[in-house]
Length: 166
Length: 447
Ligand code: FES
Ligand SMILES: [Fe+2]
Image (cartoon, rainbow over all chains, first blue to last red; front, side, top):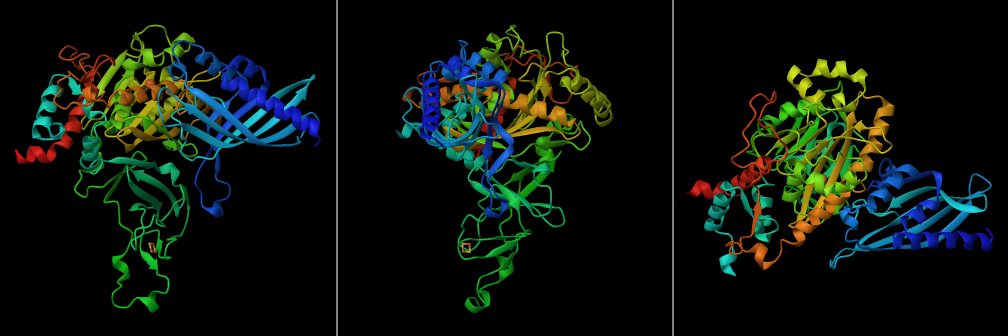
């Protein structure tokens, strides 16, 4: 994988992080392909013999661009109380691994995320961490997220809701 | 602050205030009350463990919690369900640490004792060489959860060997469970596994919020009104009946201003309607056909909601059950099961699941704001003024809605005491009255 491409994709994800942390959700939506599949399966605790400890059948997010847009619109109302007053949030994205995707203009990108949030004057910090598997597409000179699967590492989420995007 | 300790007088005051429709705010997160609740309420009431569809084959198991008691629920070779304390009888180690799976035996990681699906101790490492007369294997089986009961596929456990039978405890709730869980051939099924997350909340308030409080919908969930997803009429969640059942249980049957729903049978496919008519009595069919949302609860910490919701413009029905597992006076672990009629078309199930993810569960556009509100309750209930047991600061919560004014509607076709509105505190009051009755059982025995 050439260095320039890796740099490009890393920059792209860093910009995304910036938009999310600053609640520039409309600009964030523009980074998503119209046919995006955005999902967050569940992590469970399984015995080693039972294979990967992920459940795809039940999820925390099962979204299309339309439903993500509805979520963003909701956060823009005056009564989305989780965001009014808004908690502070940071996404930390690391360990970015880029591989060729199934299409010539698509790349499979794995990354680790750490999401931290501080609400009101709470001393306790909410956090969520895990891995993302993205398909990032380059179409007409533009980069878009074509799909995202978010795998949390917690079987019991350490956040009181998922009002954020990961 | 000995004057602020629990004593006989405190409970007398509680009783008196509750008779006036007032709940002292100090009870919300009081640590002493919390300890008492664990013993007197969670030690004696029926708690939901799992739905039968989660345990399909012999050897299937799930691990659950009854507050702090770890529970291992297994399906034996004969197809029977058995529940044990998930703790090895040797030194008490947590026996099975997975959430679910399938096994013939459970072996402890500490010294290797193993148990079969019946809970019998069947293997002791080096047994004959290290134990002699002192070991009588059959005395060291896994400890049974004293009682388990199943109703309409819902499996409950009870830690009190003397507890009343589950069916008696559920009482009139059975009739509504029959309608919700038994309307379809084959009943309901759980999709995947329950979602789990942690809310900053007190279990009483989350139970009350779900089971008994349609009044909050218009404000807490106003964002959906602003979006045009929910109706503008501030009374919309209040139309219908609030039904108070025994033992702190109850259900809200939310219809509309006309008493009918725009979506017959909650918008379930028409092909399913004859099945409902076959499985239910005419009164249940009547209620089911014209209700938009059912929301209610089984005391102490099981709630349910059966709404119609969708993410892409078309609406679907589903059934969501949840357990509020207390993790402390200000914390609950939420367990959330998505259930759907086994007999529904696969396509419908898929759409209903998406509707659920969009509305309830931790990411739900409705539920997100509930969690925020729950946190605001505990946050404002820990100070000296809120906590004062002598009520010198008038630290009382208001449960006066409809008090002494709204009379039951005797024409309602279902059992229970049905009031002709869901904007009412009758069910909340009955939950808290039962709560107090259980807390003071020993005291009143002494009187
Ligand atoms: S504690 Fe389980 S075998 Fe010793
Ligand atoms: Fe709510």
